[in-house]
Length: 462
Image 1: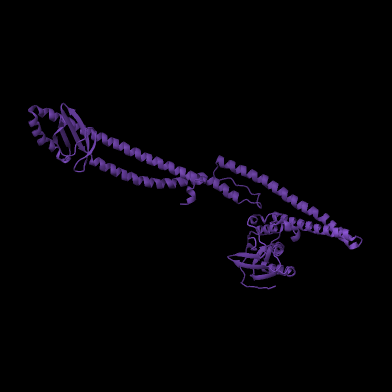
Image 2 (image 1 turned 90 degrees about the vertical axis):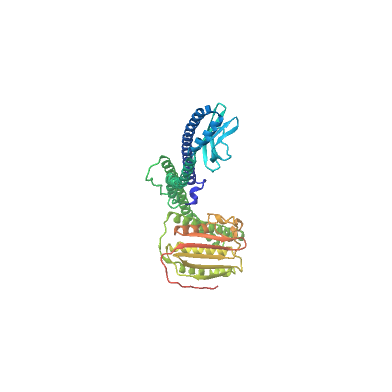
């Protein structure tokens, strides 16, 4: 049985545990009530039998006491011991006149109750005073004790079996009670930022409380979808509208520089403006890329990612040499993939650009592409500064920088890794990073392969 079922912190566990405890208490209470009721009836029967014997003994005493004490004792020894299974005791002012042999030295109780004789057999005792005499009679209770033990054994077995049944029943009841909520939760987990148009379907069985939750969640999704669509549309429209004025500004600044009519100070200012215009142009391009990824407006085709990796490495070869960074392809296996070729190239270029930016001269950047169990695995490793552990969960966010002070030197707008994540998620994969300050970083991209190709290894050195 799953341990989660009995965890009180979960609704399922709380309902199951409560039902199990309630059923267990009811079973135990029922068995205790049966035991007490049956024992009460048994004691009533024993009391009745003992009172009958007391009446007989009183009649015997009245009949024979007229002959004197010696005659009474002689008749008692002769006749009282002949009553099978019954024990008797006759006293006069504390002196024992007669006691059954089964009692030995055991004295019968002065009041009603149980007594165990020398033979280890239990008796139910009833007593009564008759003049100066004290009469006590014990009727055998061994059969009643045996029946009670047998009943308790049967009830203990039934209780254990009942608890097992109670546990199964509690699990079934808890599962039935929480199944609608689990269905709503499972449907909600399938909703993410790329399928906000989906809604939670109606349940097979209608429950007012769960239907209220489902309706409220669907309304929230509608509002969230509208807000996200407005934001995406604004980003796309703003980025598109900014491209034209940025192009005009760039052309005008380049024209002013090429005219040769600017003094050195003005020319320096225009060159600085051109750098900022270039940064803005790149940022707008990145935002448009993200908008296309979010809207799903990219083309898919069968491509070999190995060719893209090798082309991208050669593209950055000169950059790596100028920065005195060793750029090496350790392994590349053919990986046929169904995706957008330009976006996959952008994915590899962004990872390589990020690795080279933060690797100091004399460092190393390694690239590896492998296949296993239908998954393509791209690994980009660098020996750069590394990323603080507190920043790792946020490095794939838009405009986020682990070290904002280096943004001017390294360039970019903090969108490169956000684009990487967007491309990977669009193609149904996942991206992760392992890093530490002073230990470099390792980015791992995993994407599902279209089909398995023959194995080959390509190596390249700087």
